[in-house]
Image (cartoon, rainbow, N blue to C red; front, side, top):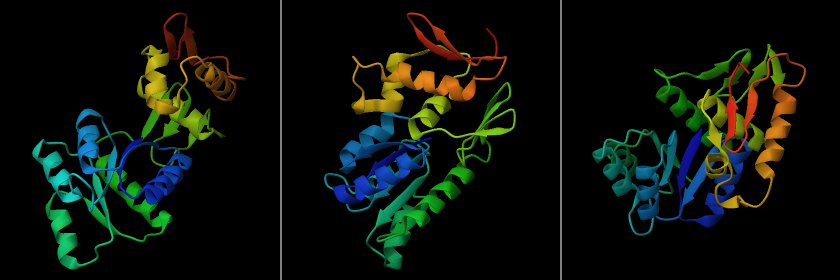
Amino acid sequence: MRILLVEDERKIANFIERGLKEKKYVVDVSHDGEDGLFKAEINPYDLILLDVMLPKVDGVAVCKELRKKKIDTPILMLTARDAVKDRITGLNSGADDYLNKPFAFEELLARIRALLRRQRTEKIDELKIADLELNLLNHEVKRSGKSIELTNKEYILLEYLMMHTNQVITRTMISEHVWKEDFNSLSNVIDVHIRYLRRKIDSGHKTKLIHTIRGSGYILKDSQ
């Protein structure tokens, strides 16, 4: 799942980003309202974490503009303002929830999970192909009923492949979604992670799910 974090205090942003990535979320970060609004308009996100007091465009204005443009991504507002009228302003602008700073990271995670559950009431909570299952809410992966432990990058890579089952996924698509600015186009990091993922997903199973399409990329399917 992909989250947009709009927070101008870099220490707080780095702390939240690191914590969310450890929980296997893909995170994009903006440090001002203008850039956050731009990212939210061009990218599909499952959730937006939006600080209220932002440079260029404040969080309330960003929220109002997104709702005006019919972007219904769940928005959790983060702010040091704890007055009732401030919470009401945030919620009336179109936010789905409101969390006061400072907050415990576990509470932030709980709020995120609650919003994602609410958002997915009419969507799938689990991806499945053959006997491989991936739970989008608790990030548990199983094959033939047996749990599989994955690293953060392996999980994000598998989730992306399962979101596009039976579609050829290019190295460029993977690099943009999984590695973003950290990706070195000359490295073999994608091949290495695909190899690790194959060992955990396909090893010991007659039906192989991860296939290489030479010159194109990779595909997840339940047939040769």
